[in-house]
Length: 212
Image (cartoon, one colour):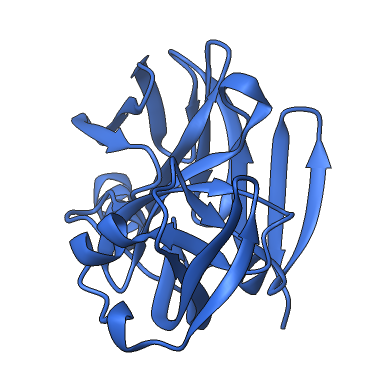
């Protein structure tokens, strides 16, 4: 009877484990910043939480173990540890760790194409250069063209509307952006995205909580 009860309990728990989503959102020294089912956790190698054990950490990847299975988590890419990448886009919180120079960077996607963002609270819009826009398939040449001031002077900017912008398990729709004629070093995550969130910074951690 005890064995049967244990089997039934295990069967009941398996769907919960399969539905669990984990995202590696950066490192804080020798610790990994993981988001497990939408909740942020700072974990060291060897530490286990909610069935997820950290077994290794590199600059842009965390290796975890779930139910005896090793999984490599690329920074910013959510993984359903029950099988398959991607996961739900119904999250409400983004947690980022400061990188070199104190900048907050995040892997994510625009219109389901992978990109690397750098948070810029001084930028009005999500902003990218033409090479990045071409790579992710934006039809930016038909956008409204206008002059825009930059750190290097005035440049031509083209208005575009991004269908989706996603970081981890958080996805935002219809985000205004600009494509700059000048070359840019980074794809800037500006206030057309950030304004959808309440922002809180504590030390080297930035927390973005979605407004509803």
